[in-house]
Length: 572
Image (cartoon, rainbow, N blue to C red; front, side):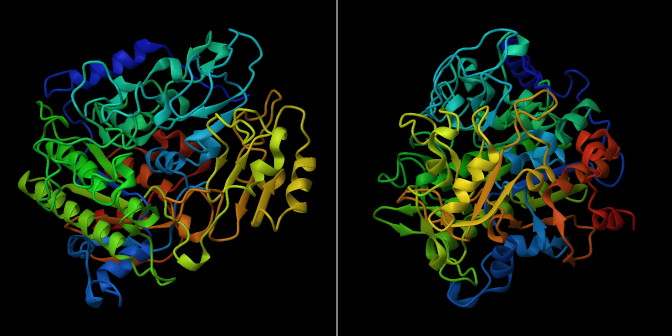
């Protein structure tokens, strides 16, 4: 069985102390990496942004902005960039494995991250019900595990209605890892039922952890405290981590304006206050606080403005484009696309233009700091969004694979559990069966109702094992590998939500074909059409900073390659 490491609260405290002590003179945090042309790597994930979104915004498309281009800053960046137009994200294309691919260079086979909400046969339920409904349950130290759904979404926050995640004594946005409630974490019976923190939930090391261990200062900004896994096992791979809770209730942000000048106090959209990602306007304020944090780091400060150094590797994710693609806001209308050519709706157009403005401010800050020439800027996305063609969208939360299988799947995953966290289903269905249930029997049930569930392809047995580990409850089998993965017909989403017009998680082209620009002022513009993967970003980050990609465990296990075109440009 693949071991799952865990730890107690002491590591969370230790990581927080590491953040607080990361000053130019603390702990030899001066850079010993970056001895070549590149001294800093800035990674930006515009979640949801497809390769075609960049093509359209840089070339212009009829039906948007009078046919004129509408992302001048990204277009300018591309003039000294390699544009990888056939880039694939992780499969499943959920944000959690998507970020793991970028950070570690690994697929779920080695990272163990299949979804933010998934299942692990070797762990037990949390001691306290999570904010998203994963019920508390028993854990018997050093006994046979019961198995449990794993919640690495906002549910592990102390209070996910708060922008600071409910962290005790924290400022309005300053929760970070201090907002993790250890009682809401899954527990490892083979480690005395200790809670499994996100940074130990990932099984392999990351580029951030490798660079930190080599003396480089590291930082990351994301949407939940659970994304602190970016630092890798041990909890000390990040010097500065910032994660205002995106699913929290919207509140005024005194003194904060969007990057194009709109005040965020009072609340811009008072009708869309259930969560920042439920409103086209409010999400721009949310992204703004993260951009300002990043600008502090570019200036050689911590994200909150304390003394530090410019990180060797750092970055953030944007939520605005994803919201523009996927949300229907009551009283406002729907985002998404107008057609299969990816013509953006007015709402999506506004979000793309806004993120482009943010990119312009970020590049200007790099120039002001005098580090633009020795910084490699990587602009990509954890995942895409499906469907682009709005006529293909079908939301059906009734006829789903999990609903059909019912009591054949664990109760914590089953739709029969009306108060639970729910099955791992978006525009994909990732299924784990109860111990003793025949996979073939379950597959036969799904095949017999393929039309009702909109099934496109089904993977099980060898077709799962080909790209992942052999899963199961027995010794030597991977406790996290799903038994069955169902990818529906393009556009079918296993949801009844009236607030969504698209989703991600699946294997379809719209889900996985994402933007990837790798830029530096010394580069000659080039377009690469060969198949590339987002997991190649991690070994490339390590390599350009003068370290061996072989330090990454994903490189050793999966043979993940660097982006050779980047290295060729740097070698000139």
